[in-house]
Image (cartoon, rainbow, N blue to C red; front, top):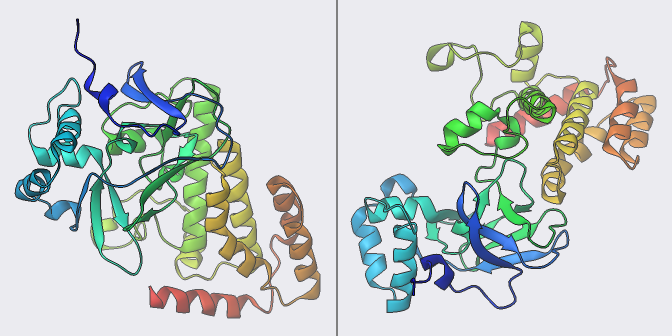
Length: 335
């Protein structure tokens, strides 16, 4: 008789709504064993072990010492991952790097933990699940971002800023070819996805005055060769100096939400991320007429409706613009 696949021996909780099985073109993955409703916790997992260091400081000795502290069964679980069931990692450090998650809370130390089950979930740039936050004491938890049908593969996005990156940029970071709808070339959806994600990145530059890495484009020194996201020099400078008018800032934020929703990425955690900025900007108008329009926009049920109402503010200056800009500059000074 053939030996069972090493992944089939990994300990999945009896109440977990998934099983591990081969995923075409991806090795193995996690598949729903029943219908999983939006917002449902899929799995809460503590690490097999963790290393309280940044990833570039972890050595083979660190991993070996952690491995030696495991029980015999836990060692077998790690070795199953180390061998990746088919491809052997050259070192323990490589195996750890491929199967670990960052665990950081603020304030608090940084650490990386090895999670034997979550590391079996495959990536998608259009995921149906998310690991919204990590904690040094309870580990990590995955949550369904939409309804997941029985038999459907459960996926999450391996990076936190892919909503702003093109297919080529995403795959350069992943070092493998993703086959989700946003990555299959030659389709209408993929072409629209490229446009949406590029626009989201540009809108973020307009509202934050910097790119994903916190840098400006087209300046002097090491970043001078970057292709600028914003080609209008006057608009670009206003964004980088945090002097975008309040009316434009609200329109940019709402358009970002519309694009994320069209892309299929606007889940509750994404809304929560943008909510403070939207509340601050929409309530910062001094002119009564502008405040009324902003307030009316924000009570609309759909993001596209909010955006369309807010467009009536486009081009309007407001006496409160300077105060808003001062607050944003003060916040940046504290970062």
